[in-house]
Length: 464
Image (cartoon, rainbow, N blue to C red; front, side, top):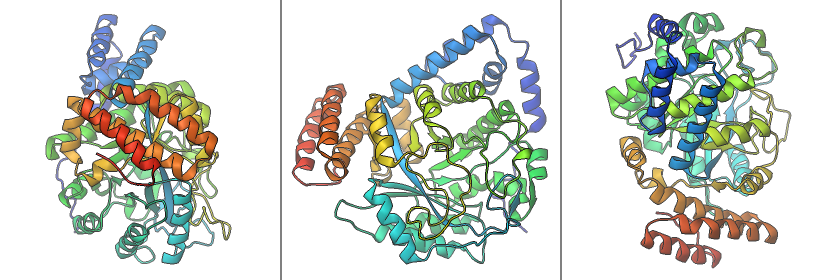
């Protein structure tokens, strides 16, 4: 018998549907009060989220975006944390209608050898990446937990002239408490898992076979991860499988459940929107949000959980990513390949989905800088133990700024020295000089000034 790690059925479909129905009758005065509350960085409860999801008045939607932008600037400043996915295996025993890796898709599957992992990581590090997200399909025979452990050890053991990969997050299928303990022991960063859809009838209709078909085993994965010692977990849904309003409320209920039980909710929330994929049945995506709806739902999530990181991948175009950054996104991938062996390209790989933003990493980073943003390669919080409730307490008190901005500036300086040409280094130096005065603590500000000089002189991996 499966150990779910949680007996509570914290996603109540009827409750969510009732919330959405009752929210339709909200008065203008109530909407205004909710927006005023969000403007004070107080977050939102379920009913308040439902009301904002249901509102269609242009003046209220405009204010939702305005407040989301304000929250983003106040808590996250101009920083954008960079990462890259690393697909290590496309073996999968699940038959998920929407996925290119579904088990009945007939293509030559493979998993990386450790030498191939090293080659992929070498290429990623040469792009300047310091934070990776390991991705793999579910197959206990061809991709057991021992393989994922070996991948993580291999990555962490690699050293380069310009440093090393400093944080490896993992996105693999729901597993046992014991397996999560093993991932914790080998040094996992954040454990990431997308619910795909919180609407149980839709979930069961789209997951046709395999262990992932068990809705509650999948939904309670973060409970088992927390019980296994992993206090940084990242959730998300695949927008398009069901009504986005229902999905957003599902995310909020899930986050609240984790906060009540473990003292901390999602470290990050990802907002992928479904894309075409070879071998997938995209006709099942009957609820794909329009661009306007997608922007609105991201902004509402930012209002609801102001201190939770939000991630956007290369599924979205650079025009959409630009808009999303301004209203809540704090992390993004760049130069991504979404198939096994995609970076080395020794043989044709099958991507999990079509990429919309295919610009090289360096081009994405320079674009962010041209927008006045600070690409951050920081991994300091994980290595300093600022995870779980400790991270959230720093975030909610506003003290996280005292480390995030300094570390972002120092990692950008390091990136410029190691991967940029002279023109890029000059651009980075101007950006760093512009933002150093924003560091409020005099001692920290001077430390950053001194560390920038040390980095230019050849030292690496300086952080606070």
